[in-house]
Image (cartoon, rainbow, N blue to C red):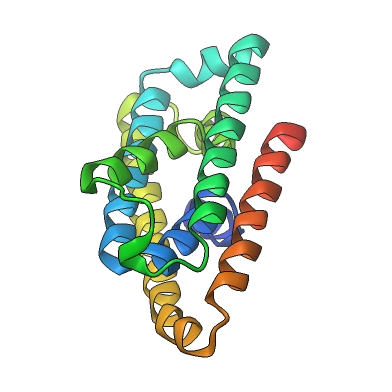
Amino acid sequence: MEFIALVLVMELTPGPNMSWLAVLAILRGRATALLAVAGVAVGLAVHAALAAMGLGVLIAASETLHHALRWLGMGVMLFLAWEAWRDAGRPMQAAAPLLAGGVFWRGLLANLFNAKSILFFVTVVPGFGSTGGEFGVLGAIYVLIATAIHVGVVLAAARLAPWLEGSGQRRGVQRVLALGLVGVALWLGLAA
């Protein structure tokens, strides 16, 4: 139960995934954002698998690898912020095209370099399990909870999109969210 509570706190705290998925749902719609959720879930599953294999210990022990992952994560988030800023205010069909598979891969990459997730699997999960099997179960619990929360964020943000379109506020909200992604990227660079 304690692990589930920690996962809930971790995932309900705004971070790179939540911010980007909200922007994506408002900008490109629910279906596209849900495809990104699938990419994020696969990224989380990769983190869980790496932790189960003991590779999280290597990341924790290597300052160079940790910094490289942090800067890559920051770069990915800045790229996603630039896309959101560029497409702000455009109708969904006029936004720069993203292939369906492209948004999945962006979700996967954004999460593979998500320092918040990496740190969770490197520092928190080992306190709850000691074998690969235990890590696998904990990882599955994490992925299920995170995915449910991400789906909720997408559904809520997608419901706002028509209201934003009708009220003329969409461009402003999208730009604010894009700046929020820049803030998350800076947080990754400075605090992780």
